[in-house]
Image (cartoon, rainbow over all chains, first blue to last red; front, side, top):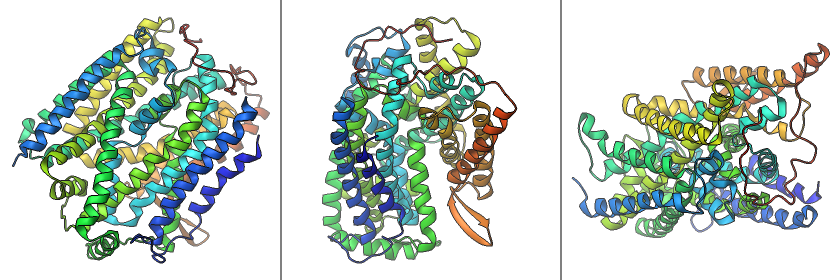
Length: 60
Length: 519
């Protein structure tokens, strides 16, 4: 299996570690707790897309 | 009082999707007297249709009502829906193309078909099929709640039997076009439903915070309102509350693609890359869900009060939008209930037909007979769901749906591990499943039907999602019993899957002439 798949672990680490239980810093009125998770939503989708593109060759 | 303008817009949109539902039978016309066509749309949906279909299927009306209701009633814990719907997709990307490939090759229609082929065990197949049906039934019933709350908010109230008439009409229409068009109907309607949802949410998250003085004020006002609740809530998860939050998100993510209706959506894909691309595109719906969750806070900030938390969002829309747009938004929610209800009833019907009726009662059924039975069962399933919601207290349906999540996760070892290894003994998996079902149910019931179980171990308390604890137990039992059963030389049945059949390379929309079931 391609090494690219390791990228898919990253969102789990980011969301299952208790590092975002705080209000500050806020962004556009959103407490950190909320915007951190919403930003990871986007990063996770991008990572998934990268893995899809990068592993397409090997699947043929 | 009845809001006439909203009601007219609502009814017009509803009629529109009804026409579409019946028309869908003609789309990519094929012989619907074949379960592969009726129940999986011929397995030829491309990336865009699958995006709409799975979006409409996974992000149900109940989700869109229940998540902001939880934020409105309890605060930050409701936001677990976001990490939950993030973590689904990296796993889906890896696991689901394998399930798709092997089911495509063998013309398997349900997850239980795969389990039977892989392990040759009827007991395990039946366990997976019945768990799926059991977990799906209350979920269908709860979709009706979405329709009920918008009807109520528009002023459609009656007494006794009359109160349920609009709901009954909606469901008869749904049942009729599911019967005639199969999976094609929700696939087509999902396009309309999801467009309406996106429009509603974009308008709502721009217009409502502007009226309320910006997001900063929404969060501050929500915190004040939550702190004043009889059982105080907060907009922040405490460190002590985090294990429950995280396991709830992770466990729900593990469970989602084990639900029969999710599998039905996945198997309708044209090829493996349709699934992979959707793993990257479906998070768009998670973003919408995150924004919808915040509507619960906006309702708090707008000073909406309601004893029934599920009315929070409909009441907020009614207070904030002009009547015609209330009609659009409410139609989005109601149609949003029809799509998953249709797919869930199709999935439950597929399971019953393939894994119970054909297997036990009528092994020589022709494809036409299979399709006829599935259509009939889809009607019965929906009638059952309707009766459920009319005659049984709502709290009971909610408890059962919550248990459904715990139950469905217990099929993970047989299905997901089965995609990678045949190391586990079928009987060990069966006993593991049974232990997981009993333990999970007992844990949830002991807490008055809440998802979080406080496990006491080593003198400390570990509160976490009961489904995860049950799964750990399930896996432990399966892993311990496997070498024991092998040592006792308990026979292992043949594996119908040959090496390489999990690879989807080179498989594409090949029209399948469904052969009779593999015996």
